[in-house]
Structure formats: C-alpha cells, structure tokens
Image (cartoon, rainbow, N blue to C red):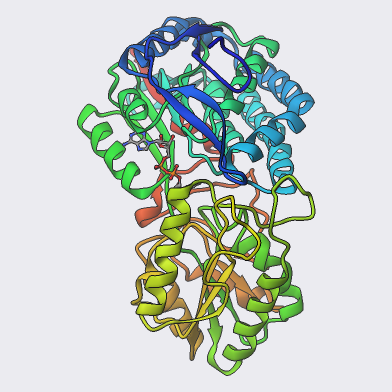
Length: 479
Ligand code: NAD
C-alpha cells in the first residue's frame, strides 16, 4: 500500500518521508466507531537508528545558528500550524475520540506554545563573561545534543510542542516518537517542519509503540529523553537513562485532589466539573478526580457534582455539542470498567453512571461516574483511572483535607475552590504537588509545569523550560 494520509509506510527522517525498514504495522482505530481507518509503521531499531543518525548529523549546524534564528523558525512553525489547525484537530479527534470542541481548543494552544518557546530563544544568553574567584571566565549554555521526545495519545500536538519547542529553541535536534494511537497527525507536523524552514534532520519522526520508544531511549546517540506518559513507562525510562547517564524529564500520571472549602459557591464551581475534573473524558493527567468535600456539605456536593456530570452531553466526538466522548481504546475502556466494579467491591457507592451509556452499541463509551462514601485507602482513591470517574471524600477540617490530599503517591495537580482567594491560596501552599489551581483550570504556559513523587521529574513550560535542554560549560582563563 502506498503512503497516504491514513495509511503510512514511512517515517519522517532527514527532512523527507522515508520508507520504513520495519514491515510491522499498527492499526489506527476510530474509538467512536471502532472502525480501523488507518495504519502506521511499528518502527524498529533500524528505523530509530536512521532518525537518530539524521538528528546527529544536523546537530552542529543547528547548534551554531543564532537563538533568534531558531526562534524565527519556531514562529514560522507556529504560523504554519495555525493554518492547518482545524485539519489537525479533526485528525486527532478521529484517532483518540477527543470531542471536537476540545480538540480545537487544544490545537489553538500549539502555535501559542511554539511562539512562547521562540521568545525564550530570543532571551537565551549563550555566553556570558564572569569574574570568578580565580579570574575571568566565559560561561556558555550549549544544547545537550539529540533529544528523544516520547509523547502519549491524549494531547499529542501540545505535548509534542512542550518538548520540541524548548529543545529546538535551545539548539538541540530531535527525534519524536508519537503514541501508536495518535501518529497520523504527526505527518501533518512533518509537512510543517519543511514549511517553517527547519533544516533537514533537525526534527525527525519515527512511529511505533513501546518497543520503538524503548529503542530511542537506549540509543547511544540520544542525550536526553523528554517523556510524557504513564508512571510505569516513566520508571522504566528513568532506569535506562540512569544507566546511560542521560538527561531525562518525566511528566507522568496523577490522582489530583480538588479541595472544596466550606464556603465554596457550587454555581461558581460548576464549570470546573468538566474543565478541571473530567477534561478529555477524564483522560487528562492533572484532572482533579479526587474531590474533598466538607462533611457538613458532603451530600449537597456529591449530588451537585453527580447532577452536573449527568447533564454534560456525551456522544459522537464529531458533534461540537458533546463534551464527553469515547475512551481512546478498548483496553482503556476495560480498565475503567474494572475500576467501576472494584469501587463497588471496596464499599463505595455509585451516585451516577457506573456502566456503559445506553444507545451506544459501538464505540468505547463509559458513563460519567461519581463515587461517594470513598475512603482514601481505597484503590479508586489512590490509583489513576484515566476515565470520566470522580470520587468524593468527606473531610472534617482543613488540616484533614490537606492531609488527605497529600496522602497520595502522586503530585501533579491540585485545586482549591472558595470565594476567599487568599484563604484558598494558603491551602494551596500546603499541597504537595507541582501545580495547584485556585478557582482555575487554566494552566499558564509561562509558568513551570510538572509533578512530584510518582507524577514525574523536572519541569516543562515556564521561563526555565530551556534549562532542561542546555549544558553549562565554563571556560576559565588565566591572565
Ligand atoms: P504510556 O506510558 O503507555 O505511553 C506513552 C508513550 O510512551 C507512548 O508513545 C508509548 O509508545 C511510549 N512508551 C510506553 N512504554 C515505553 C517504554 N518502556 N519506553 C519508551 N517509550 C514507551 O502512556 P499512555 O497510556 O499512552 O498515556 C496515558 C498516561 O500518560 C497516563 O498515565 C497519564 O496520566 C499520562 N500523562 C501524563 C501527562 C503529564 O503531563 N504528566 C500528560 C498526558 C498523559
């Protein structure tokens, strides 16, 4: 079969589509219809090696371009992306089931991300002279080398931008390994690289699954891995990077707590049920899926969240009226359903949802579900479910709410909701996590993003985003 929009037999290496060495293929499935509508190559070691080779060959010239020139290429990439944004949104939604409205909103962020990283390139001081304790010195910030960017399926383009944006700005060359579920959109990105005037080999794309990712991680030509995905994969990658002494940043899973203070205004909280607790049908790493409610308002809050979730339109992700779609694949659907059964076995009670929605005989749909009478030692309160499932726990004091929030293996997100912003901010200060929103679900791209504990290592975004892609070099001089 020849290479086309939906059936790919190539990787993007050294500025062009190149026939893959691997003959293995991965089906691309529409999760709303269960229809196989495409396929991509399951790349092997030879494919990965060719991409890393191209990235290494392009390294020295790209590192030698001025940061402003690199910023200009990123700005051109942002412009090119903007022009194809709707096309990318449709392609992403068809592969991963993200409701089209959200898919479009997510693609709108991508050019903004590239422009932000371009501004960091403009500000990058490659060299500075310093007077040190032993004399004068030149301190240089040099790119780390070839970066492997490994991306999950839930936000493929923004999460790619969060990695290659700072990498390219810093002067690194890159090999991207998209998720097997969402690789077709990366071929649009490949076209945009050329349009933006990125030199051949600066950004390469190899498709495939876990083994392709693992081949990239262990390749000796790669100096840094930037990974977003599950904690289990993150730990395996960290172990390999430790043994090779490679740089690594890990953005992993979460089980973030949303604390509703006793004066919470539920009408004001209402939009956050979708935007903060269950965005992308709950398949979002920093979703606030553990809601902590003051005991005296517990019943009211449980019922309010359940009624709100029930009323959110669910269905065909192509229909802009829908905010819940299918889960990404059958495995994810089965996993979420297993947690629904487990929660009941653990003694929690389902207030709404708990099964498959009526009227959908196709597609990986699960009903938005709210559990009450949940204790923090239950697995449904401790483990990441990655579906439209919210658990609500009661607390008796703010100290107890903070203790429950922090009694978690994860620490990626968090939220505090109250009309008293100062009081809520004080509570937010006590949450052990990389990010906490106070009455907000809008994460700013010009602030650091990342997790603690099992949620990851290092930070993306923010003014220091380039640091993870730079090595310092000191040239100290005698007189
Ligand atoms: P996953 O870890 O299975 O896969 C993510 C990516 O890593 C894919 O490209 C996959 O092919 C690759 N991969 C998997 N195992 C690998 C290995 N051993 N070596 C190298 N590459 C490997 O995760 P997923 O199921 O695709 O995504 C869902 C998970 O990602 C959830 O746990 C979610 O919380 C997490 N996530 C985190 C963030 C964040 O910013 N923290 C964002 C989105 C998703």
